[in-house]
Length: 352
Image (tube, rainbow, N blue to C red; front, side, top):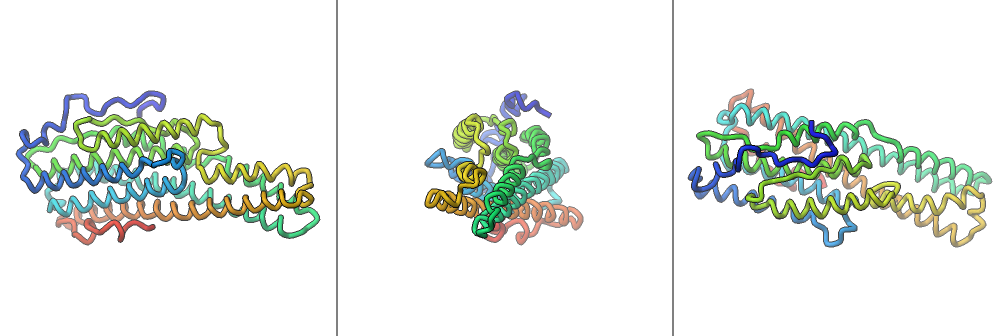
């Protein structure tokens, strides 16, 4: 396991492993080169989407939803590539299968951790709804009751999720798997391994951003190094540099949370809480009503964002799971992976 405090070294210690797949060294057919170029070109486009026009959008729930959608699309691209390569499971090297299955189970674990945190954050919304209900009750003790619920909300949101804490060891393990396995006597295998390398890099990086955001720790944010000979390397470097700089800037600001919509709710809570604590809220007139209205609006926006991203994370989980199940099924049957399992369109797999 690599140490979180140290930058990750390049993954290749024996020269450039991609020379084996160059046209000069491997004599890939025009069709295989076209498939590889198409995959890597699409990968660049999907990564480019993650560089927002406004850096303030980074770590907003809408940006995180976009990042997870892009990741789901990349994994669907891999499935489509396997179909296009017409590479049956019976022709897969045992090492390829082991790598695929090992990575997939780790991604399922990470997805479960993310879902757990999104559920926990959504539970906090129920406490906010309770606050708003009490403020509208006209009960003599409405301020005291609302204060108590806000205290419960702050305690709930500020607590740590043990499942999210398990993401860093998983990410470290995935980083160690980021290399290109040597492929002998299989041009299709070389194309598949290089494409899978790109998908793995994108997956590990995006998951590290999510882990950092959900854990409240920049230590979970990875700095990955990829060979600059890859056609998508420059785009990836731009994404990583832009996003990591802003994420670390957000962490250094000392905000209650790094999630933009959740931080907006916290700002409203801080504004409203003194009025409730002093018992002077209802007498504040328009100022009090405005504070309550802003809390209601930001809480609803947070809830909608959490619901939206939860669906996308669930969609990613299903994509990984169906790919894994298809491979296991066809290993047992010793037949090619059916197009129905590996070649579905993104629209059919991603839950939006």
